[in-house]
Amino acid sequence: MAVLTTAAADTALAADKPPSIPSRPVPSPAPTASRSPSPRVAPIKAPGPTTGQAVGKESRVAAEYWTAARMAAAKPLGYKPLGRRAKASSGLAAGAPPGTPASEHFSGTPVVGTFFAHGPTGTDWYCTGSVIDSSTRNIVLTAGHCGLGLNGGNYIFVPKFTMGAGPDQQPFGIFKVQHLFMDARYGPSQTSLPVSDLDTAFARVAPNQFGKQLQDAVHGALTFTQPSGYINTVQIIGYPANSHGNNTGYAVQCSKQVVTSQLAGYRQMQMTCGGYFGGTSGSPWIVDWNPTMLTGKVIGNLGGKGGGGSNDWTSYAPLFGQNAADLLNDAIANQDPPSNPPPYIGLSQANKFPEGAATWQHAKLLASGDYTGNHHSDLIVVWTDGEVTLYPGDGQGGFLAEKQLAPPQSIWTHAETITGGDFAGGPLYDLMVRWSDGEVTLYPDVSTAGLGSEVQMAPPGSQWKDAMQISAGQFHNGGYVTDLVVRWVDGELSLYTYVGAGTFGTEHQLLAPNSTWRDATLVTGANLAGQPNWDIFVRWVDGELDTYVATSAAGLGAEYRMRDANSLWTHDLVMTAGNYIGDSYNDDLIVRWSDGETTLYAGSGPSYLGKENTLVYPGT
Image (cartoon, rainbow, N blue to C red; front, side, top):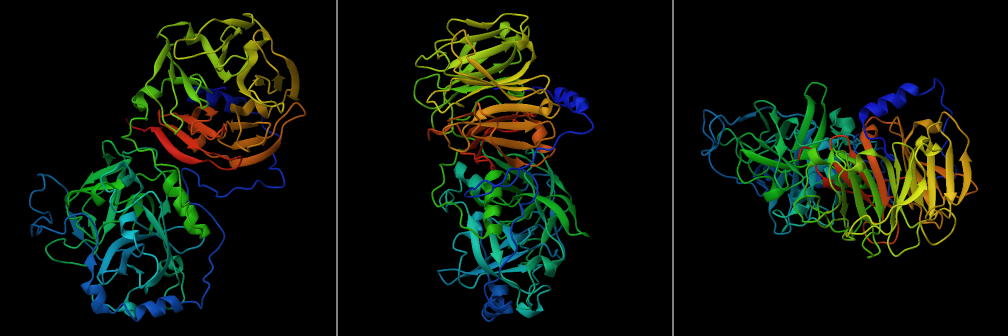
């Protein structure tokens, strides 16, 4: 495991970057994967849409049911109160705290509208939805609890809904819902549980009755965005049951943009603004809203705990992460989400790290290994103050209470790079350390009882002072993690096979000194492809992510591109890979971000990140 622990170090590497860096071509054939998760930010692109029927026919058939009278009579769906009459002067319901901002009625916007559904009980109801930018141009965002039962039948989306108008008189027509995509772990009885973090859904809609795709008709869309934290300035647009008296069916927005905060115990935002009654479920939470250009970044939807809030002036929204990104990918690709995904790990569950992001900003080094003998990975952390702690893994993506291996202000302030491997042949994993003076030591069979005895691998002042990153792996078709990958300061890449206590085994040069690999900011061994020989996973100085599959003494394996250069992943400052979900593969990546957020990507592949589970939330 190797790290570069500060943004300043990243800047220094960038400054050393030569004017021309050799290209890192993506190998052919391309890797295969069951799904292609999106980046943490930015919309996801996929093949273009297919209607499967005559253009507009589905919506024309739906229009036969959805008359103006039926739409006007539809009841709002949502768990928020429908309720109390708003004060005529303020637009706030009785009971709102003094100074609470109020919503205001306005004419609406083409990128936000209403879902109408004819439910199984015979009731017509509605929720709020919004147009999401995609290559298919037919995706609508709403809340998961609005989406329950939305597949099939006479279910439609109406952008900028106009009360009293029939389907053909709506500003942009109506769009028949073809299919809904939501997480299988979310259900109607879970609105007060951590799983309410998954209260998000996306729908694919058919062209309107006039034959136009949704984005082509409304000439605008919101950009799906995964925010970096809970504090955001947003505008929220929805269709409540009751706002400014009894103006049912008209759009509302807050009189001013509001600042969100974290809903304690949940991966959700909260905001305060009155007038968001039942019917506003699914409303987009928009950053950088431009009502003229019809653009903005949507970072959540009204929903979550309690269906989105317990009164009309306090509203909640799931904070978009990898789970929501996966759903959007599925909607664009028109493929059903997994029917039996791994259990959802919520923020309030006991297997999260108890320390917050302010503490985890000081997690300097990470190493994975089986230090408890239960055949899955545990996590060792070296902190900036010299403390060393061990977090035993629970085999399900979570962690038990930490064990201190070294106190603060210890010699571990001089540790530069660490890795976990099975070098000494004992029952537990070992910890290898390269110190600031060039000494390399091995601690065999580390456990919750302590670090144990030290074995010197290289003396102080050795050439190992130039070893920028070390990472253990299995690169010789063997059954044990006894090999070591080293990235040197001059870009040389070495592989040492059959490393043992007191010996580095046999050295193999994978790459001669070069300018390209000087920019390999993080290097870690992982088994992302599931082959006997492990892979080398690299985060480059520009944020690019690459996997070199089945690396061996014969050379680097084929390169697979996981992410092109991007600014987000330059904030990945510490990284390790292990077997944290108990599936026998070291394909679970743990990333510590610059703001202290710490993330587990479970079941990653050579070209995609696995399911995102947040271990430490930003702003905590």
